[in-house]
Image (tube, rainbow, N blue to C red; front, side, top):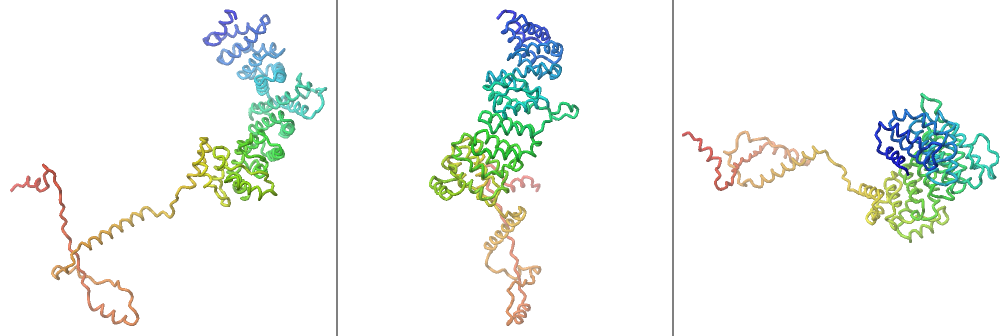
Length: 527
């Protein structure tokens, strides 16, 4: 590398803002026609760096010169050139509108290069370039191309104008790679789709949902490589279309459930994603809860997609408590909370004529598996009075597990909350205080009565005010002696003796050198 090129590289890194225009000019010289391919690659890479870091004012001064370089890149694919186009489209989207034909040709070259090289970086860059320039026309061309690739079993010979004009479209060896890349382009394009803007109606992306879903369904029914790419596009569609896809979400879920004969990671991941995005009830996945559970042919911890199954089942259990039969919940709970292999064998023997082929290995036998901890926590949170809560199993698993995942902490918290002691029939605080005060007073009265002298007081000590009429506290008389007893009781008055108040002597223990109250008062005696 020459000294001049080193100076340009240094200027793009730590150059001052007032020198940005001159740095742009120096970088543009590196991509001239008289430069070598390596220098051109370096020049476009440096231009990409400058486009990212330059201020809008400096970029506005050279945007015409930058856009003129699009024609140079459109002849053949250059990675640094495609990266430069990407940065220009991000900073200045109007450049793509002014040079739409040239930019679209660069995008097609990038897709062909990604198909041929199988480089994930090149494929991601091609998908992002298409997403930056997505429109109704481009998306229709993309869907038509996918339709042709998925429906035509023979070699594609005649390419019409309503598909993408790709050089790899008619090559049989590149067919699978091209189909997967176009599904990836579709997924990225749905994310870049412009939002509804009332001020600019022309930029609204309006494509029939049926066309997209039909193409995705064909991709799901294809071979495994294309199937995975189609599932990625479906998750992108659910994430970006959101509630506009609800009228057709039942059809999508039914298509996915029909593929449960051969479940895989992408299928279970997509079902769990739809359940979390739309909810089990809105997406109608709760209707297929038992079918999904019985489709598991091996224990959950032995499956590659066990974590996705746990996410799916726990979401349904916590959100659809009142819409699923309790018998179904009990069956799944027994399989998750199986105590030992003997009980599991008995359960298999009882249900050998049912649709369950093999129950899940118990959470007690595998206390460190996060998926079983997640399902146990879901059953503890289940709000259905007809389904027993597996509290004892959960507490036993919590005591044995060594897992530190968030499912373990949640299971422990739910177990503690469910089994905590409860206090019922709490009285009012004021009422309790009054009751305690009354009990204390009664106790004090009883103590005083025990300490009072037993000798009767003389009549002289009784005041006139102490003579009171007795209260009739005796039990009701019998009919035979009622009149005689009443007359005798009314003729003899009862004298109630009032207790003398005892003088309470307060003794104060004085320390050495301290004076009592009397000593202090005597100091002020003026006599």
